[in-house]
Length: 391
RNA sequence: GCUAGGGUGGCUGAGCGGUUUAGGCGACGGGCUGCAGACCCGUUUCACUGGGGUUCGAAUCCCUACCCUAGCUCCA
Figure 1: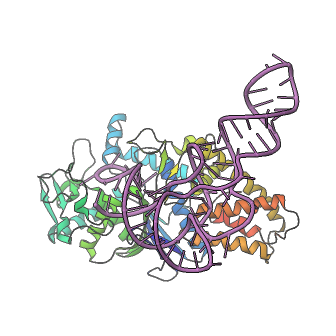
Figure 2 (figure 1 turned 30 degrees about the vertical axis):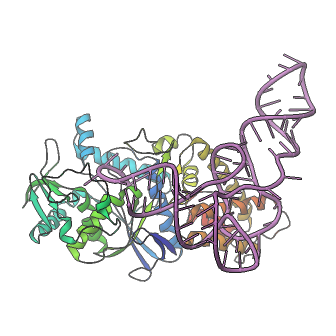
Figure 3 (figure 1 turned 90 degrees about the vertical axis):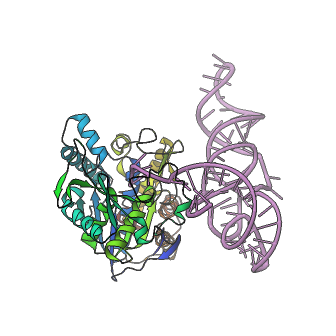
């Protein structure tokens, strides 16, 4: 299939390192709150990516983390008078409840930062020894210049607005924290480097490569993670292994609300569980898949309602189609639809197009009496199995 | 600056090589109604930023110019 690689800025044919196997890592949530619709979009699109490749016959290794050590978790914990660990565990549980309702397949491996601290400390110590990192103030920083700067995903980084970047403690403005001494109330670990906790970027490098090896096929995440998170990951990996790291970087776009990104920093997010009070998981899934993953999508009641209508149409079509379920052959008319449907998915996961094609077929089936719809059930089966929309 | 995505009729917004040029809103006419509203029917019959190019044919592909939006160390 063709996928858009952020690294090259182009659509490329997906060729895996090991034929027949896709090794993929996706940045999981920082578990300080319930998941919102933006999270849903990321994990649903990745889920369809996985399901499609599995349908093509690939074995798909899906590794996902939970960032359970973070300032926001500490903040929430102290506000509620609880231990950070308890807060993280709670929201991990809630994450699974939400994702199960959205029919998102479970990952092959889930990792938690808190379980990887010794390995992260070990990697940090190695970077320190090899001169890729330095100690300054109360933290250990990664020296971006030592690996020849950034450039995996962001070019001409010097052109970026650097006004708000603090310097002084750090050698270079783009250097970032690998390890820090803990502050009051934070969870810390004893290591040969002293007592402290890991920084954000190195976590994902250690966790992904631990399961998938130093080189793997796909690294997925929200578009907001391109810089700094993924760029920093690439720099760390380069220093740690001296290998290419990830072949395909894939990023999905945001869910907007009133034109702005839905997130904690810009207004209230819409939690998945709140949407599910009014619409089914399949409706939300249909809504989020109705637009291509690299396009922004505007969240609105109108959008959900229209997704509900689409789903209704798909269900009508599926009902008619399933009457001759099991029939191997496919009429020429249906074959055209099947080609278009699977062709859309093959072209950079165009779920919106695929959905529109299935919907049109459903519509035709409810209206046209004299056409041969033999084999149409296979398309609706794919809507369920690949798009993950229950009909 | 860099990266991504855009510039379509009064507005919104699909279409992304050729066909019935969506749909919605609004407007206009009619129906229904004691009058409105809602609802129903009809009309709104050739819009695609400028300039090149490819093609038998371009809103749709390529180049170029201009303009707009978003992001750029909290973030999926």
